[in-house]
Length: 116
Length: 111
Image (cartoon, rainbow over all chains, first blue to last red; front, side, top):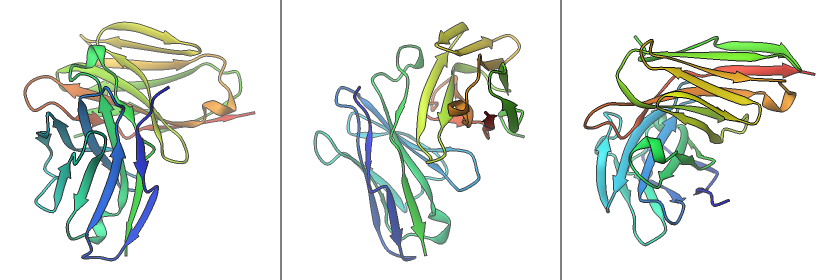
């Protein structure tokens, strides 16, 4: 069964550094998402992406964050200047369609980001 | 107040028991998801519901739109069902791409 893949599985970085988290969504999917989960807390929506542009973003997704689909397969999340509070598990997800009733979300296994 | 509430927060049961996890929400939704998060952190989609009931193997999910309530049932529970079960909703209306998540129910099935 096709799956969403994320790399790396664990990233350690120093405060103030830039990080890029990478995702390869399922190939025929059109909608892409980033979510994050701070340790011990619930999962939170960051951003959705469709047709090479941001469709929706949450309050968390400030100017420090950006997303890109640099080629036909990768979908990246960049954090420009990491803060301690950016430490979390970041999940990429994709879906074939936007409307739920025909299109479940497929999640990657996540990238655990640790900012020191 | 959280828009999605789950109960119980923690549940420990014996192998073979029938398990029920509840989810209540306070907003209008277009769909509700049940997700499973394994100890390693990965998230798997179990069900997506907009009405009625769905069944997959030993798992059953129901939703009552009028009461804004959904349940996830596990029949003949097994230790491998131990995980965090998360309810998430997609709200109606514009700007509703992202799911809104509950805090999850931590389930432990003892042999």
